[in-house]
Length: 244
Image 1 (spheres, helix red, strand yellow):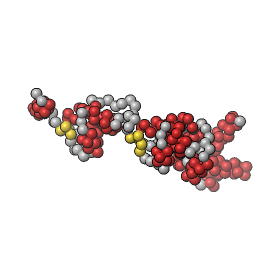
Image 2 (image 1 turned 30 degrees about the vertical axis):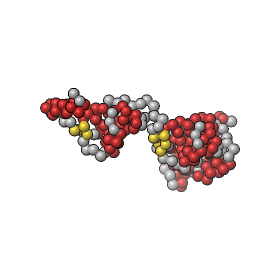
Image 3 (image 1 turned 135 degrees about the vertical axis):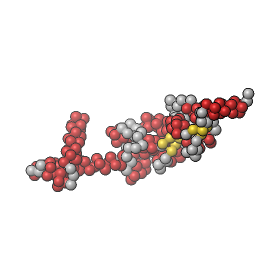
Image 4 (image 1 turned 90 degrees about the horizontal axis):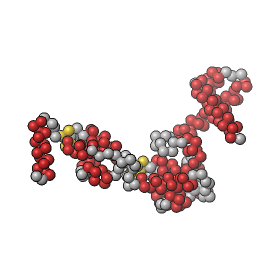
């Protein structure tokens, strides 16, 4: 019996049993998203026996219903434990690493050499390239491990980073969220600056007899916001004294 004859027989049996051969693609779409997190289309195609074009159409939502056999093939594939080197991923973590290394004075060619890649790819990341392959991310991580604790000699890289407000490796070490694309360092910087300013304002108002409530009203913030700024300021001073 040929493969087509076997499939036709299965479809006929399903019809007799009241089992629909065309089903909702929702479960397949969700599983494809899971597979795509760590696998390339080439890997998924090889594992399922389905064409990558058809699977891409399903993932895009082009099909209101799909063959039950297609779903069974997709759901039978277990996600890879590690991303495929050729898989495309969010470039945000690598963009941040390149920019931070430049802020520390490392030239783009130095970063490329440390990671075993070419300067052009590092330049594109510095410019904010949105997507990249996993293999390049691994190379940038290698450069980060080698260079993030050192100071570079490129004034051009440092000046470019300063002009664009790119945080350096020490800043990222303090916050520890360099791999989180949802984290907005610009927003944190603004909040931090505002918090520091409130703490300084309180140090000026307290000797004048202001209560925290009255000081908060004068500064146009809630008492809770002022309290948080004061607590943060004291914690920073304590850390500095301990380090000294």
